[in-house]
Image 1 (tube, one colour):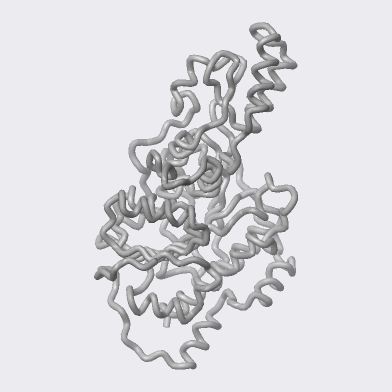
Image 2 (cartoon, one colour):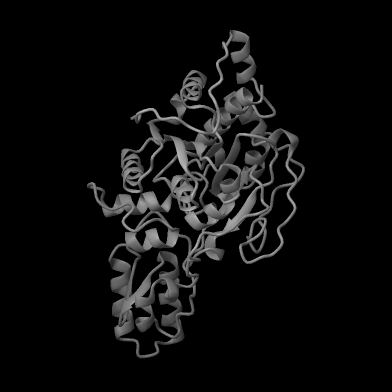
Length: 398
């Protein structure tokens, strides 16, 4: 779907004849490569001298509470517009982040656990060429403990449940059998229950992110609580015929807004007139929501998302949040070829930010059966992010 065309303030459209030689040079723009066979060889060769390791604690290049930030020199090929921002799960199979980094100009990943921004863990890696000085957090600062974020649970929280934060929010809601088992066990176990019972119940609660909603009653998070913890507006995914299962799946695959907004906050001063954004694998619009909450005007957003349920959520938010810019929704990242990219840029102007995170189905540790790295059916879409980014940077750096 394409909205009506509107004027933008981020750059004039270039009126230059495109020759066959121009197109060939753009498609071959390096240091990355747009050819899948060459990319695959580079990924699988294992010629990296040193594997990227995950830091502990996982605080990226600095948190809002820290006065100083780490130094992060950028490789020369990564400097300059458009800005790019790529996200995926931190706990990927061995060598995956080396491969991702090497294909994104050798930029060092920024690994962050969102438990430093909200009451739930979410370990992610981000590769970007954004400045890291002058970041600021969204206000108000979210609550960082379970009982602060979900105050109704405090009354029922047993003293032996020592959790203060939730584990990573997943895409599936726990069924009724586990909470029922917990209730049955606790009802006959005494108060407090024996250590063995406590350990069993705690393990189940941690695995399924159960919270206490009554005496001996543990329950999974509902979608509205999910939205709040991830930083989305209330009812962002509600309505329009979407099922609870689909809401949870869409939320589980999304950005944590406060974390991403902290990284993107540097763009507010750089683009006072607003931005043109290419949002790949948009999902339910995490990038768009983060930029909007920062007060950055969205002049044009070209959103590429294959799932209708997610496209409908983003389109509803765009209308309900009063956006004045242009929203262009495309179906499939694989159909976004050079000709289509040039057509979009001719019509709307240059892209200021290319943002996205390809599906993590084949990378996440929770997926034991199809954890095949970057060669999986879904995770291999990362190569399309690289292809599109290289093509656009090739155009804009001519």
